[in-house]
Length: 398
Image (cartoon, rainbow, N blue to C red; front, side, top):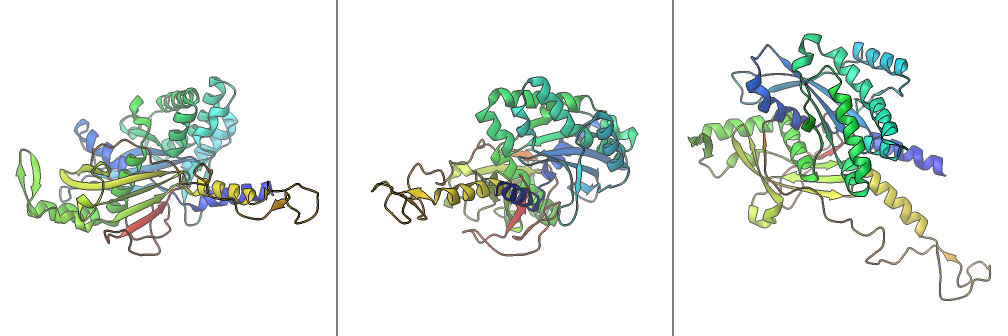
């Protein structure tokens, strides 16, 4: 029944895993380094606003003179941060937050921020958004030492849920976005308006690729190889070996709630449409990265489509009258619906996202197709793709 479907939907969403936008952390670190007299370590706060939930990630990071990339550690506090969030939620009459256990440990509130656009007024939308974000903010405030708050950057990146809302309900999207910025700006952390935004599908694919390769160590290996084989020209590194460092990286498949992102470095760039290949620079090292976002191929959208397909299997035969007899012409049948160009289960429209390059300096993940843990770790390995590159499957829960 409907209740069973809702339970399954919730279970599927949770078991999709958690996609931490680690790459944004690295990007923000690199762009903000010149603002700081570096202490022993610093912090960055990132919220991943997906279609099924709003997830908090807090990182402690440092720069080593022996490495080209920052070192990051995600805080997994379940003590004072969780108590502070729960206390604030009770005081303000908010729904609070959940701390998922098991394979997918994450601190989150539900449902996704895009669902609040259905509230009756902008004021009601703002109240719902505060209810989703404030417990997460209080968690971060309790876990990060107070003397670091004013200099700790706070980012919120929204993915497919809010991307769809921008198309289907522009006014609701604007109200949600305004409430997000107002709520974060009232916190004790450092925040600028454009640090809370909806990213394109292509950006999501790039961030996921950087995250996986950072966390696995392949990005470190590629960076070291590029620096050892390259020379400087006009303040940029020019690899001498046809970008051999790119061959050390792994490809990624990021399965979210509403979309699927694919990202990898193709062996032969001319085998793919040039519009799908982005020029990405990490620590001055160039990568030619193919990325594509498949809308409506996410776990939740796939589940919804399968339910629609099952419901449509019972169709009325228009060839004859219905007389109520079992099997009589015109009665409902269990035949599958015929394929048609406008069938709702047909292939989704092409991916969204701008075709543009990106310059990243950032944190991120590991590889080899499998289910992920909270940071996208893997269990099952395989090879995939026409290029023969390793692929990593990362579930994010949308």
